[in-house]
Length: 460
Ligand SMILES: Nc1ncnc2c1ncn2[C@@H]1O[C@H](COP(=O)(O)OP(=O)(O)OP(=O)(O)O)[C@@H](O)[C@H]1O
Ligand SMILES: [Mg+2]
Image (cartoon, rainbow, N blue to C red; front, side, top):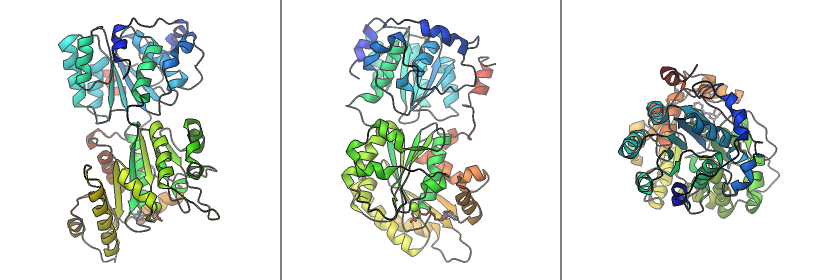
């Protein structure tokens, strides 16, 4: 963060608050945004007078940002920033109640990519309050604090405790945008996104189905934007599974990876839900697909710079590029069916990954299509012992739900919340994202903050 000291020591940048006047209408008396707890803002608000001065603020990736303010002024500044084109891709929600409301909320819900907390407390009281928040923060969540005190010692102490940035109130929308933008556009920092690679131990074992359902679960229940990259270029099923028929997709990106930038990526992705997009395979056979490991890595890196979670659906074939993806991914999920060929192949993949990823955890093993009627199977215990790996999930053969969902272009949970596999998808999502399963919420249109805000008398 190049401008760390600048933020605390400089005077706040003055801005013309004319546009803010319009925003007042968006608040109720308590300063909470009307029309639901979560506000997702559109593009097209780039003509404020202060916008020209915002040269240091760069577009922010598709991250989720939840803000807990104490003062209406800060909530208003965030609201204006959220409507700026630089934050157009981010999902921003603004709530009142400060750190106290945030702690209560995150005890039951997953934390987003970035939490913005306003606190009017100072010194040890502020640190104590933030320690409480840190206890319920998931790994990978950044925290930006807006405080009352312009004190460099406090600032350093906050950074030491893992706070990503500290801004002093009153703060302009421009300062906020810069603060957030710096967290995600610093060339010194890693790309924003994690990659999760899914591979089957054998063809047809359900790897893609599990990949798509887990990606959907992550996006619906974990407050995160997900892109599924379908690298089964000739036979991929991502489009079918999400009932989409895109004309362009990942093949265009792989054909000339050096051309891929944020704008082209936007055009090549197909949006399926509010938080899930697919980078679909062309599924055309009269083309040759020459994928190079470097090209593939470049494409995935660009997606990672834009989206917090990239889920890669690998075909069941072995190549230099699929091996590269598996060894480089943050998490690997191997799906196997409980028979001998699957066991042998899974063992080979597990051994290779253990040898090449010595500082990472083991891959996640999913035993799929277990208990298929009349089929002799290797027992779960025996299968796992042979691999020296616990199964992260065991999913039963369930042709009724899986067959119906595939035919409808739906996810299992969309088809039936009662299907047994739903719990397995929740468990896998939580494991992959290193989240506590207890904080996973049932999908709903509201943020889940409603009852809390009501209790605090901050919502109508
Ligand atoms: N637990 C299950 N019970 C019943 N059917 C299932 C189950 N899991 C997946 N299937 C079905 O198995 C078929 C193959 O699944 P999928 O295409 O996901 O496998 P894959 O491993 O990705 O195959 P490929 O090797 O072609 O990539 C699909 O029709 C899917 O609906
Ligand atoms: Mg597949």
